[in-house]
Length: 458
Image (cartoon, rainbow, N blue to C red; front, side, top):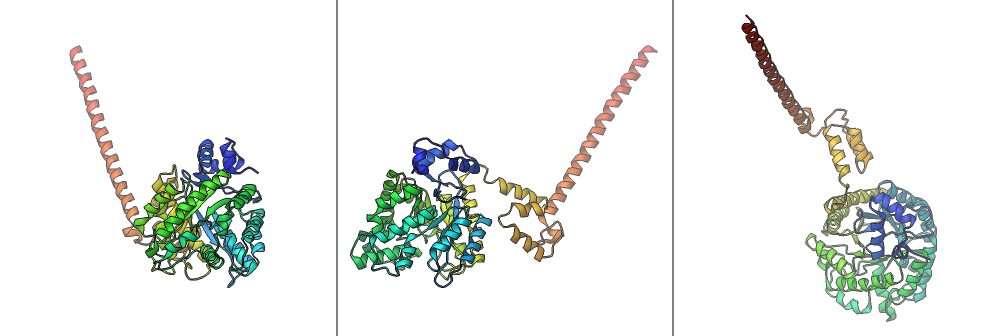
């Protein structure tokens, strides 16, 4: 089976490439070259039949992911379907089913059948759910689940293959240890069984499965920092270098790759982290969680992380994993999913403006024109969340050509428009007066000329 990467390396343009190029408004040969080099990916499992493919990587728009999924505390297929519909409605480019409770296969199948956007998973969660153990898992248990999910149509999977026994001593001194669920599971298994990470030792077999179905690697950052104190430490960087080596191995097997990045990073470290990932991982697309730039805002972490996401995107991160208000607190509701998506759509768009992606600011300029001309319906239509904008204005009971913050007398745009109107009127009046004077002068010349001619005749 040929993957998007292998097709691109052979110079073949696929229907997925053609579609993506038209959506991104870029030359399809440029896109194909980026895929061949590994700097762009198109996560598109051959069994995801209703997929509208997207591109992630260098030179295309910054993408956002929304995490959904049931838990053992609350599991409902209907609720997850409501979440995936919200993801598509509000513009999430992908979604990850991170279910750890309920019927995982049924939930995932329903999500894939509903979704026209790429779907990702963390197969380790299902391994634990099925076997109900961590300590007694067999290495091949992971391969069975990975193959099963690939057959279902999962487009990309987080594979925590970079945490190794030699990296574990580097965790000493951390405040929050290992905050990746998949990473913590594998650390536990390695220590109990005194063996190396099975996702690392079986990496070639995983590549074979991924190549068969064209599943994209999302190389998981098991040792990502879970607080500012732990950011950019030796453990994180050691794992990043290992992920870079695995990127090359996956490419050798014609598998597409992106690399996951840190979750909690102070603003002043974000550019460094992006630069290090691009360096150690050979330009593979960078998928960042947030990053969160402060640890003191439970309930508002969609904001703290969107700040970091915009900065990371500006400096070259390609793909932003959203955070909801429920982060660190509980399972997000559908409304919280929406809030996370909107926050990250803002962050990604701001990053694309900073990156200078062609034509990306056109929408901003059109909305600004509509705002200045008080065209409310056009403003709503161009906004990221028209329903909320309309509701706010409706709740304020405003039905006038001003926003209500300043009122009609102090509305700056109304005042400026009227001022410009006065200026225009005065300029037009002046022009008329000038024309009148010139015309009068010309008439006088004609009269004088005629008079002089008559005098000569006489």
